[in-house]
Length: 355
Image 1 (cartoon, rainbow, N blue to C red):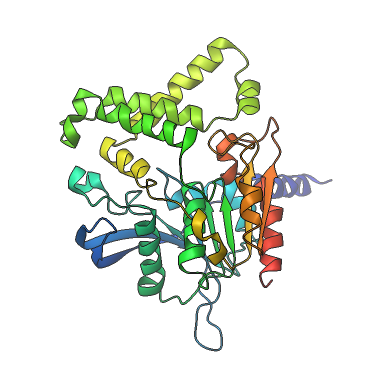
Image 2: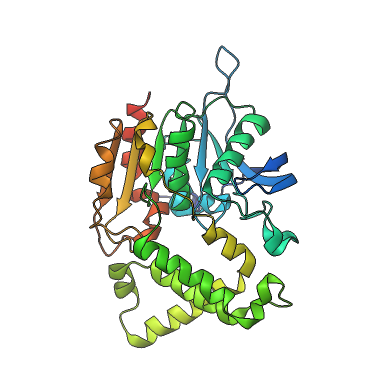
C-alpha cells in the first residue's frame, strides 16, 4: 500500500473510531394554571425538553413519528445522549434512527432544567406525584408540541413506571410502550424501605432545617448518595471491576463524593416522595397498547424472584416480558440505559406495533 493509501486508511479508521456526538435542539414549554393532585397550584411551570430528528406529518397533517423517552428518579433527558444509549439507537439503520423518528427527551418536573423546589420555593413547592408528572408530559406533547399521539413511549426506572401510568390513563395515545426496570405495583416492601432511608437521612440531618438550610445538609446527602449507589449496583460487574478491598473502598467513596456534590436536598426529597401514590396494579386491564417490558436479573430494586410479571401478563394480553440474565457485563438496575442488552426487544416491539 502507498503512503497516501496508508494515511487515508488511518484517517478512515480514526473517523470510524471517533465517538458519535448528539446535539439536540432544546426548548422550554411553560404550562399555565397547573393544578396538582394534592390541590396545590402553580400559575406557571417550566418543562425543559430536548429533541433529535425532525417531526414528520402524515396526509392528515398530524405528526406521526414522535417517540418520547422518559428518565428515572434524579435523572434528566440528557442522560439519553450517552454513547451506550444513543449510539445503539439513534444512528442510521438503528431502531430509533433520527432520520425516521422525532425523539423527545423531557426533563420531568423536579428534575434537570424543569421547575423544581431548588428554584426558590423549597418545601413549599407543590408536592407532585407520578400522576402529576404524566399529566404534565401529556400537556407538553399536546399543548406544547401539537401531538395527538406518539409512536412509542420508552421509559427507564421512574420513566418505566410512568409508561404504565400512560398506558392506563391515555390508552390510545401511544402505539407502543416499552417500560424498562420497574414493576406495575405499589412501591412497598424493600423498595419502599430503601427510598424512605434516603428521605429520612436528609430530613434527620440538623442542617436540613426543615428545608430552609443555609448550606446543603452534607451528612444526610452523603448517606442518601451511599444508599442510592448500593441500590443501583450490579454484584457481578462490581466484583469484576473492583476485585480488591482497596479498589472497592476507593471507588465507593469517590462515587459518593461526586454524587453528593451534585445533589440538592429538597429536590431529592421531592423526587423520591413523588412515587408515594404510584399503583397501576388495580387497572392493568386498561392497557391495550403493545407492551415490551424488560427487567434485569441483577436488579436489587426490582428483584427477579417477585411474581408480579407473571401475574401482570395474564391481565395484559398485548404485553410481553423479558428478564435479562445476570452476567459480569450487566449493570444491575442501570442495565436499563445500556441499550445493547434490550435493543432487539425494541426492534420486535416496533415490528409488532406497526413496523
